[in-house]
Length: 258
Image 1 (spheres, rainbow, N blue to C red):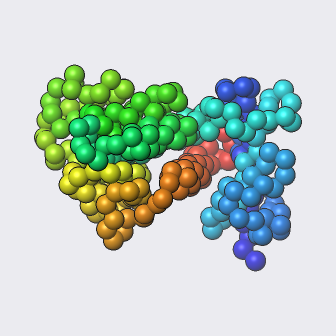
Image 2: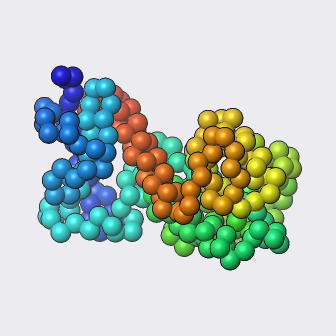
Image 3: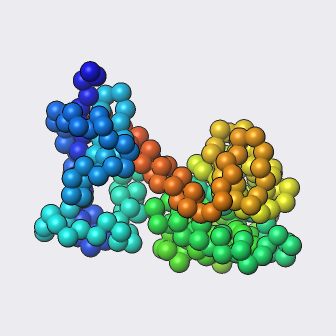
């Protein structure tokens, strides 16, 4: 049997504000070997992940009481992301512009909902910063108090859609697609033309995960049928990033955060 340690991340919060985070380590519970990622261990105690040396689980509790916790409250995961992650996770949403025959009501709604999903985790929504899918994804993110990033083809900041927090006017035309692919940690592709295809190809070259919802399907791209699959990919990225950051912080802080 591998001699692993069980590291428990205890998160105390009041309403939407995280007030304390501690990591503790103790002997492994043999039952953990039977668990899958995301399984519930005990009340408000979930198995996160495992690496060669450690099992991680996370325990959520109110600082005033350790019961009646609403794990679905709006800012919960976002605050964990903001506290733990040394760098913000960036998720790209790519697709057609307004005026394209591909920009129908379904695409409009999907782009908006995708931005909401990204913001819920505390991640940044990245697009090309203009109209259509780009604007709707940013609008959705802002409706969920998310942060937005737009990398423009042109050199004028005022060309960005009104929902962009951080505008990068690249001034390099469609070559900015290369930067979008390089910047994003995960890409969701909705209906789009050759520009969208180019962003997908660049993303695959950079070994980024690309999900396609009614968009281009080429080798290496994962075809999905609705946003529930995107939600799952976002959650996996959240957990993976959380564990990676905890590994680093454990080494940096000798096992305790407060």
